[in-house]
Image (tube, rainbow, N blue to C red; front, side):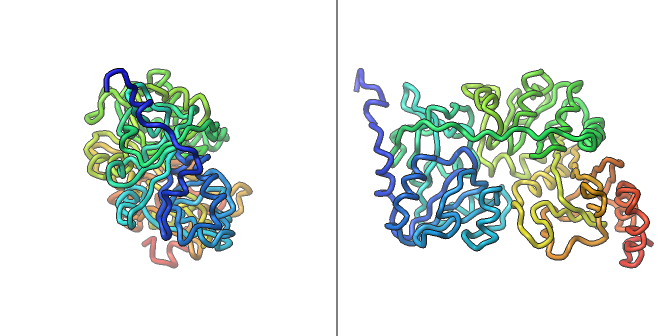
Length: 429
């Protein structure tokens, strides 16, 4: 109709109306981190006593709510990655956990019976389009395949990529104003900086980066200031990568795919990061089943993957999501990028960790993983392991060569015992 704005034609709902769209036995899908629609989830939580058999599927939850602890029988949380909020909830039996690589989560969620996506979004533009803002993750893959009810948050940035929807595509939408949760980068220690420099000196100009979360990955980014024409293709866009884009280190001009563009599947960091990605066409957010696809990663020459582990054994198995038998987080995309990087022509996959515990009493390179430890990245997918004592190159090497290389970068106080155990286990010949 001439003269009628799309925003005028599709009027917002009251936040409480979302409950009318939730059926008994409903599967609800919520984006990770700041993709969670705070007001809509408040309404759902308030109505929990009236719900029956409803399950909320989500990675990395940032907001603590009673249903996470199992206090509301009609509403149950299903986690795909444990956060500081849900870690204890799971340990106490309040919620469930699904083990999966990040890349396969859209496919798993698409199999659910008639799921309803509740997501945070930007305010509609003058054409009636909203953006999923900081989060394409697994929900962008579900656009056009599932029902959507969104909360348009005036604090959510409008981002480019594949997270756009028109108001006509929605079951409903509301308007809210909620500050996004900020996660500030951890300050690297001297050990972190040493590891960061060892990695950075092996990264060539023109390489494309995937960088995980943590102090050591932050240290790597801090050591890349003299590099040129790097690219970014990463699940997580944080403040460290933003700084490299702003300084001109990351340009993307030598990328083969998505040239001149930094690609991510979600952003998590400070308010400055959220303002940086707002209407910034140099950064695009794509669904995780594209970003983390092995074929996509492997097709980019010189791809570099950098991820942290908690423990690694002498075969090269990486435990990155549990402390012993206690689940700590989840697989995320570590295995996706480890496998993809070694498919890339000239690619490199780095696993980074301190050589020992903070007090030096326990080696984090062990002859065998701690009892019950979860293997996140298999020995076959590990390329290079880096501690403050050096770099162990594992890919394509024999069991004995792997063990010797890993012992050489272990803390000196533990090397003799590791060698003794390695010979006892037949890892060294």
